[in-house]
Length: 436
Picture 1 (tube, rainbow, N blue to C red):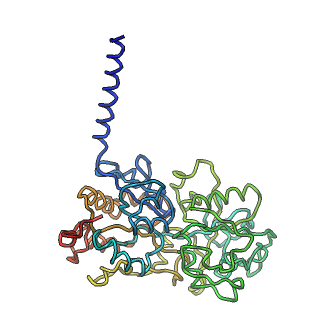
Picture 2 (tube, rainbow, N blue to C red):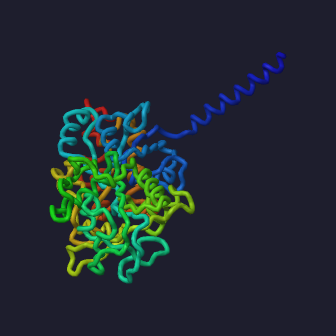
Picture 3 (cartoon, rainbow, N blue to C red):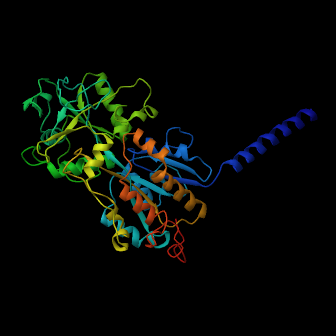
């Protein structure tokens, strides 16, 4: 009996010792963040191959990302409230990702609130993205001129701004009302269209509605609908969305809804980032999509700002073209304002019409030097490491333009610019500015 107890104690001691060793080997601090579901497959989480966090490893810190939507990510960071990322979550919100830029009022409130002790807020573009228009049970593709957007399909269904305004406002409810830009005649298919939209606060929604607000008029939009640049799709519908609209939460929820509607034989249109559509636009999307799952068909869009008008596939190269020759802030005064770091491309002169950037939001000051180092080095890898760029491209996004990469490196990852904006700057992160 005594021998048995002794063996049990020895086993328990070994187990406890093993736990202690594992804890000791689990490197670095916990670095928590979340927000945009658009970039979630790119950022990933510890142990996930083909993601940035998986590639970065845990030597300097264990990064954890919660895909909850841009609006929730903003709220989590601005209030340092981790429960916006996950119920019951504790600790610090070290960063957030949002496809929507923080508003002037949000930036002002933060500066006079948490910013007084946490230090200045940094908001910089993280990736360049198109917003795709996926569809199921749509018209048969007969084009010989439109670009490829989908595996195994040489050409694509084409839509113009009038089509987008009509479909997303509810003015157009059947494919036989949609004008094919190539033929200037309506598509032959007679099929009612369901429109899947984001029900949560979504930066993907904001990028879409930014474009719609720029191009939609009373002539091509349903009565009573006025598109506004917003994270909330329903903000453009004061009397409520039409009955053919279907709500879904998160990018994954939109994709799941489209798959369900496809199986039911229902024609439907939605809006998604490329990493949730197919492997032509995002070769690495199989990382988050089960092998053999539905490859969503995607429309090409017509940019009528060009003469003659040009058809564009939602590739990352075409999204970068849409940004044009935007330049980052170049003086200390302009660079110190986080609002100036978000390039606008609501109605681009060329390139894919619905494009923009997704931002990362972080603090200049962190209370723990280990967190500061981990955040700095992760960002440095994201902006300068070719392996990280490969992950970005594999998910259908582009890296930020080289002018932005240089400016971000000079302003925030070092103090080469001498603007004192860099993470952990000792002249800023001192005294009552204790850091996040």
